Length: 150
Image (cartoon, rainbow, N blue to C red; front, side, top):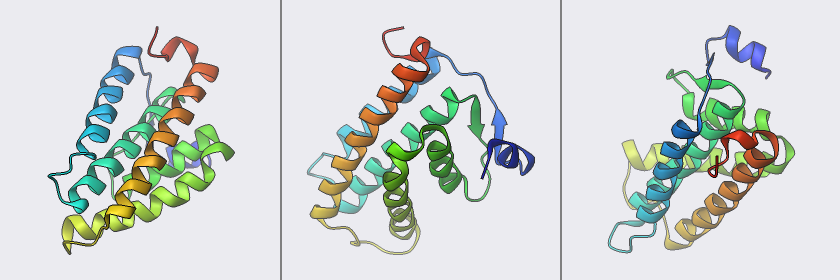
């Protein structure tokens, strides 16, 4: 899917971001990664926190590309796919992985409990940290004025 198609389907809107906006998202990512490591929480809740961090990282990439994902049915999936549109091959496999996490998160949020193992939480934590590094490096290379140092 292209940006033109996403715009035509009202799945994204044109948007101009700022360092301040991205720094707020960075704070949410840091909080969600931290919360995802709290051992007193269930594995399901930690998984949901870590998934949220990945979603915010996708929002950061999309914002840097000049868009905001509209809050419509399927906006999580659109956010992940749009991140791939921004960054390309370096996130392709991660987008596939996070889409599976999106489905699992939906089940544990709305349908079931005790679906997530500690191994899955640790894997998701590694993948979120990998994604964070990719997104921040992409921002630094392609949108240096939006890097956290700016």
